[in-house]
Length: 280
Image: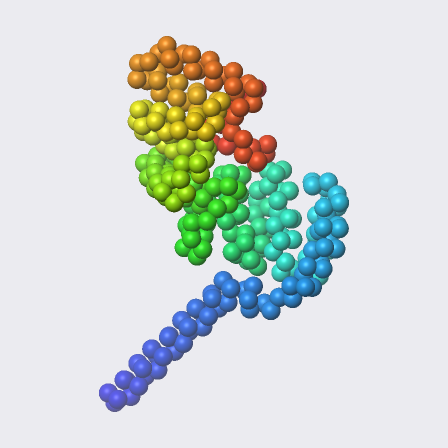
C-alpha cells in the first residue's frame, strides 16, 4: 500500500514538472519568436519595399493612404515588425496613444530586441505611463543591457520616469549613477545637457539648491543659452539669498526662452517634455 502511494506521488511530481517545462517552452517560444517563425527575410524585404518605401512613404504621414498601404503589406505577412512600428508611429504623433500602443505591441512581439526600447520611450515621453515605461526599460536592461534609444540611455528614461512620479530620491540615484558611468567610460565630452538638466532637477526638487546649481552649471557649459536651466538655476539662487544674481539670470532665461533656446529634442515638436516651460 505504501509503495503504491509513493508511486502515485512520484507520478504526480513528474506530471507537474512536465507541465512546468511545457509552459516554460511556450514562453521561450514567444520570447524568441523571430527565430521560431522561420522568417523569409528576402520576402519580407520585398513587401517592405512595395508597401512602405514605394507605398506608404509616398503619402502624407497622417493620411488614410499611409495606413492602407501598410495594411496591404501586413495582409501578406503580419509578422513584419517594421510595418507595425510604421503603422504605430503616426498614431503617437497625433496623440492616439491607445491605438498606437496596440500596433507597437505587435512590433515588439515580432522583434523585441529592435522595438521594445522604442515602445518604452513612447510610454515615457508620449503616453506618459511612467510606471509602464520603467517596467519596459528595466526588462530591456535585463535582456539586452543598458542601451540607448533616441540619444539617451535606458537609465536616463527610468530616472526621468521616477522624476515624473515625484520619486525624486530614486531619480537622483539613477541620474547620478548614469552620470558617473558616462563620465568614466566616455569622458566629459559625452555628457548631454538634457541628462544634466534632469539630474539637476532631481536635486532641486529635494531642496539641494547648491547641488542643483553645480549640475546646472555643467549643463550651461554645454548649452549656454538653455533657458529652462537658467530659470531653474535662478530659482535656486533666489532660495539661497542671491536675489540680484537670480533676477538677472531670470531675465536672461526669459529672453532665451522666447528666442527658442529651449529643450531641443527631435520629438519636442510633438510632446512637451517634463519641466519644459511654454514661452508662448
